[in-house]
Amino acid sequence: METCEIEDITNTDTCMKLAIEQAEHALNNLEVPVGCVIIEDEKVIAAGRNRTNETRNATRHAEMEAIDILLDQWQRNGLSNADIAQRFSKCTLYVTCEPCIMCAAALSILGIKEVYYGCANDKFGGCGSILALHTSESVGATRDEVLHGRGFKCTGGIMASEAVSLFRSFYEQGNPNAPKPHRPPAQSS
Image 1 (cartoon, helix red, strand yellow):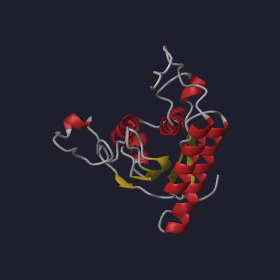
Image 2: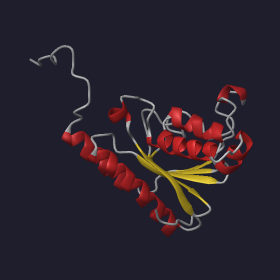
Image 3: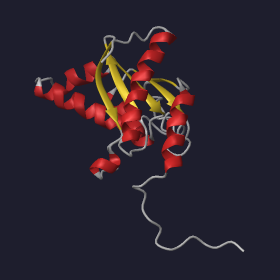
Image 4: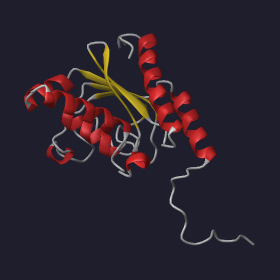
């Protein structure tokens, strides 16, 4: 994968384009088109795409796929939990859609440094749309109630129109993996 420097918007766009490529892979595999890359020391160290339909596992979001790649690699390399936490604290995630509540909580617990995302997630967003799990203290909750999360810097709206376009393509083609209704739709008079 390409090298991405995160200091300027041009390279932020470059990194987000890599995440969009992952989302396109998801779309081509009949998955909800979300993709991500994780950057450390200006290099892509992991990439992920949604695989919930393929695996029949609702937790296989793009972020969780990329996290698991790193956890597996770092654990095989003999890194301790403290070493893994140290590595995550230097990482930046680029993802095409705002992390959901599950993914935002995981990113906070892992101590990721920063997240850039494309479009907002108005139904399940964990970085401000529904809950603000990227902050060290969510509104009305103690630190312990936020799952001992560390919080992370979060910036949205990076190439949002491209991310939304992928969602439109997915939903226009219809989701062949969506459950079939148990009863026919109501007839309007």
